[in-house]
Amino acid sequence: MKHTGWRKPTPGLGIAEQLAQAGEQVAVPKTRAFVAVKRVGAYIGLKAGDIMLLDTLGAFTQAQDWEEGQRPIVWASNAYLMEQTGFSLSALKRHARRLAEIGVISFHDSPNGKRWGRRDAEGRIVEAYGFDLSPLSARVDEFERLHAELQAERELCQRLKRQITVARRMIRARIEAAISSALRGPWRQFTGLFEELLDRLPRRHEASEQLERLL
Image 1 (cartoon, rainbow, N blue to C red):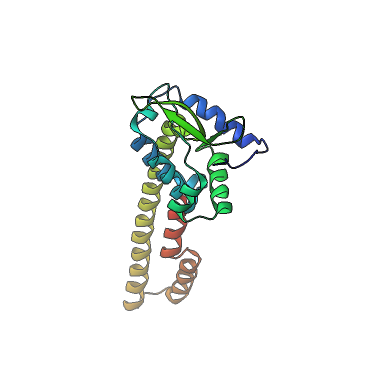
Image 2: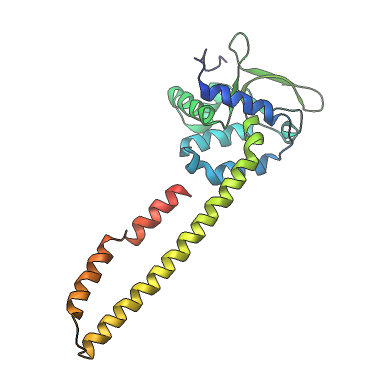
């Protein structure tokens, strides 16, 4: 089956190839690589369809493909990938291109533009052209660090939200107590100002949605 065609070189594709070369020098279990990228997928710009295609490509690889000195290259045909994902050809190409531009896969093209490969008797890839998943191996440490940073940021945001909730309830209780006790002071005015300040805060569900988009 013919590959996605001759591609115009871009900085992103060049970086992806460099990552593929680096990924060949390390051994990373496939499960670890996929968990790492999925945890930060949305943050680095991957869409749901990109992840679906990546999963489909990953299923085509074998454990030995992820060993040092090997490259997990997938030569599945467009027809097979379209059948597995439900994508049209144009959607398949679009998702594959984004995976490469983001530096998650690389295109390893054959001289004639066809996608193919073969394994030896032990199941190791001896020659292949297609989608190269080696960039995942090169970036697994980066993705794991990023996930840890995002988790720390998420925990900080949650602590701050709890502190804001406590402070808000305390202020409201103090104002209500002052009004009920008929203490002298502009408590009604404070109530209005307090409600105005609360209206400026993001609603809980909006803040949560914003946070989830980042994490």
